[in-house]
Figure 1 (cartoon, rainbow, N blue to C red):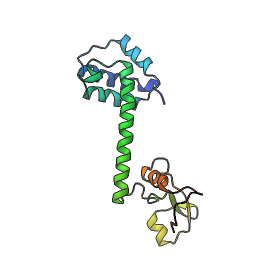
Figure 2 (cartoon, helix red, strand yellow; figure 1 turned 45 degrees about the vertical axis):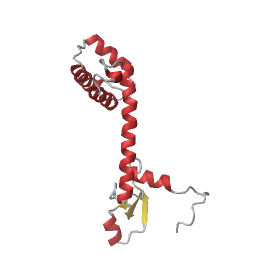
Figure 3 (tube, rainbow, N blue to C red; figure 1 turned 30 degrees about the vertical axis):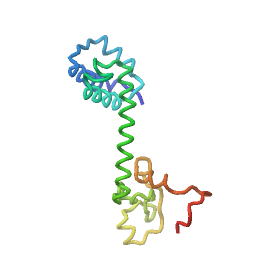
Figure 4 (tube, rainbow, N blue to C red; figure 1 turned 135 degrees about the vertical axis):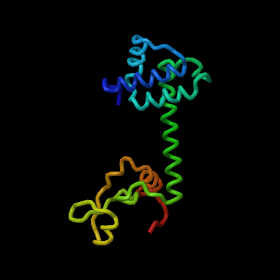
Length: 161
């Protein structure tokens, strides 16, 4: 996704807050250049990169107000940090037995009765025998980690059952 016209206020605020930390004046022309240079990013990436630049003000490649290339580099860095954070949370949750989705208990399959998704408790009470893919599959990091650990069909993974 990329920046849209509705993102302009948030973009100006993120850039303006960063400029304050660096004691840097931003005129309309310069802000417009930053807008065009970072147009392909989404607003969350820009905000995260500006926040990272504020935290590093005066050090390394953030000695001076960051150029668009520096903001772009901080964007990819903050994305990899977020990815590592999700991975760490997933590993901790798998060890502790935490559950992300109460609808499927992180199996990826939601129980149904008469074609309607029901809670696990109701499924047990009413002896549900049908399931369908749970809506959490796209966002459930615990399900994804479990799925990645399963042997693929045709691979030897030993007897699982």
